[in-house]
Amino acid sequence: MDNLVSVIIPNFNGGNTLGKCLEAALTSRYDNFEVIVVDDDSQDNSLAVIAQYPCRLVRLAQHGGAAVARNKGAEQARGNTFFFTDADCLMRDDTLALAAGSLASAGPGAIVGGTYTVAPYDRRFCSRFQSAFINYFEAKQAPAADYLATHALAVKAHLFRNHHGFAEDLLPILEDVEFSHRLRRAGCRLIMNPAIQVQHIFEYSLFRSLRNAFVKSKYWTCYAIANRDLLADSGTASVELKINVCAWSLSGLLLLSYAMGGEVSLLAAMPWILAFNLYVNRGLLLAFQRAEGLGFAVLATVYYLLLYPVAVVAGALTGTVLYLRNLAQSGGQR
Image 1 (cartoon, helix red, strand yellow):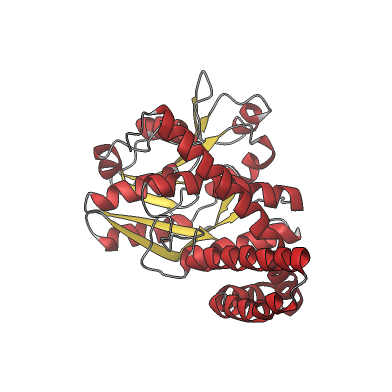
Image 2 (cartoon, rainbow, N blue to C red; image 1 turned 30 degrees about the vertical axis):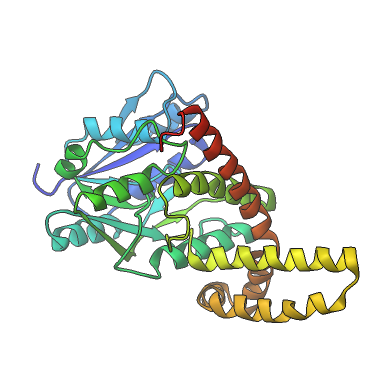
C-alpha cells in the first residue's frame, strides 16, 4: 500500500511498558500506518496487554532475540516503509510523519534514524543521565551517523528485504549497528534526523545503569575489534567517551603508583588530565546543563567522570576476552 508505514515492535517480557508504548504509537498523527507487535515467547502478561490494542500480533514459538523478532515482523508487514522501535519506547505524535518525510526526501538508497528525547519517561537520576547522554551522542554529528539505532529507525521495505534484514547470528545486541554498517558498505546512506524522537522508559537504578554500560561496552568492544574500528567516533561509543575512559584509567594508574611509591610528583599530571578531559567532553557537559539545569549537570558530570568509566572499562576488558575466545573457537579466521 502506498505510503503505508509498518511500525514493528519486538517484545520480550515487556508487559510493564508495552501498554504505554502501544498507546503512544496508536495516537500518531500520521494517517496511514499499522502497528505490528512481535512477541518473542514472553512469559509475563504481554499477550494480555497486546490484546487490549488494535494492533497485529506475531507470536514466536520460542525465544529468538530482538533481531529474529524484528525480521519476523518485517515478513508480516504490509507497508512500503518499516519503522522499528522498542517496547519500552514512546513515539511522539509526530514521529512517524517526520520519519516518513525524512525518508522520502532522502531519496533512494537511504535509511533514516532518530534518537531519544532529552528527558526520559521516568525521573530517576540515572534515567535522566542516560537519556541526555544518548541524545547528545547520537545527534551530535547529524545528519551524518556511523550507525542508526532500532529505537527509531525508518527504512524502505524493499531495501530492508534486499539486504536480508538484521543479522540473526550476531552478538545478543548491536544488530542495528551491523545492519547500518552493512548497508553503508553496500552504498546506502545513513541519515540521522534528531527531530525524530521516542521517549524511553529506563527506570534505571545505579546498578542497572552501570550494568547497561558494562553490557554495551562488552559487546561493542568485541564487535569493534572484529571490525577493526575500535577507535571510531560511533554514536554513544564516541571519541569523547573513550578519552574519558582513558583519562580515568591513567589517573587511576597514577594514584596507584603514588600509593605504592609515595612519589608526589606522580600526581602533578592529574589536574592536566582532568582539564583535558573536561575540555574534550564540554559538549556533553553543556548538554547535561541544558537538559536539567546546573545542579543535575554537576551530578551527571561527577557520575560520568568517576563511576561510569568503571563499568565501561570492565566491559571492554570482558569484551576483549570474549573476542579472543570467539577467535580461538573459529580457528583464528577473522
